[in-house]
Amino acid sequence: MSTPIRIAILGGGLAGASLLHALQPHSHLDAHIFESASAFKESGMAIGMASNALEALDLIGPSIAQCLQRAGAVPMRGVRCMLAQGPRAGEMFAEVDETDGRARVTSIVHRAAFLHELLADVNPERMHVSKQLLRFEAHPDGSLTLHFTDGSMHDCDVLIGADGIRSTVRKLLLGVDDPAAEPRNTGAWCVMVLKPYAAAQASLGAGSVNIENAREYMWMGEGVWMMHNLLQQGQLVQFVVAAYEKDAEGSDRRHRPVGADEIRRLFEGFPLHLVRAVDETKLICDQPEQTAMYLWDHPPARTYVSESGSVCIMGDAAHATTPWHAAGGGMSVEDSLILSALLGRAQSVSDARTALKVYDQVRRPRTQRIVESSRATGQISFGLSEEFGLDFDKLKAGLLPRWDFIVGFNNEKHREEAIKLWEKELAQVGV
Image: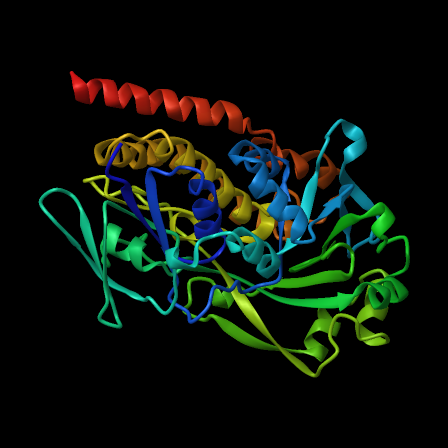
């Protein structure tokens, strides 16, 4: 086709960058990415890419999968679920292991490193920083003019909002009065720290921290949860400590101070090597006070796409989730797979807008199910579920199956179903 389809991606985090990378091979797509900050950067430390996300990366193409490797991702040989408190503290009640037939369990990658690799080969002329969206203007032909707070403008045929949990595009799409336009505080907070591999191994022992037998550990206590894993080719160990604060649920709080004494109290009754990591080696809290962030997620949106098909949302802008399923990054990659598969086949602007509508139909049910399931899994992970509590046998039988619909997902079939639905929609338009 002679006239390229103009695509604007708002948001320069992992969701937007993975989509831009996936669209690059398609010469008929004129895709640009806009970031509100002064540079393309990622907040947070590491994310996990479970087997479903790794499959989606492979289906997008070898170059994006190679980005994960170049970013220093560490494949985990297994994920171990441990009891931290109670009569059976220190015991493992469940494990996902590569020896159970899974070729890949999960890979842990530093967010900033992965983002850098995704954007490394992008033409700088397609990357725009310090661009905070103010509004978009729709024209009679369905095209859009984006208006930024610095007074600049950009014309496009479709706008894809990948601008995070407090998405401007989400608010403009749903309407500011829509109850799902804003995220909600789940009441949980977390602190994250990175430590050198040698220091972590010296404190916790080679049984827990070992690049030759890399495994992620999740520890469950009463109202408290801890996780540690390896990243950056094994040079670093990430620790995440989370707790539930009922009074904060539904509030507007974003951060809170957490003192070392509070973390010590949370770790009372934990296995001795973890208590030692707090008290003696100060591996987990090496300063008197840290800033914790509250965990927010999105209520289910009625749609991810505008009525015209010119605007849609993806990634955290569409389905921000809590981390209990470790599926936020994976959902963004799956979004990019479907959007790139459909937009890559579009031969006209009309085709592209139909693609966004089909994306909404196939992605919204799955992603919203994951968000709601993650919230419930968080209560279980904190030992606060009436059904499970910290009962070893109940957790052993019932926790891991909650991941089955996520990691057992067939992304290749998902992509083919989306393509068939898109072709069906185009055929009906042509009748």
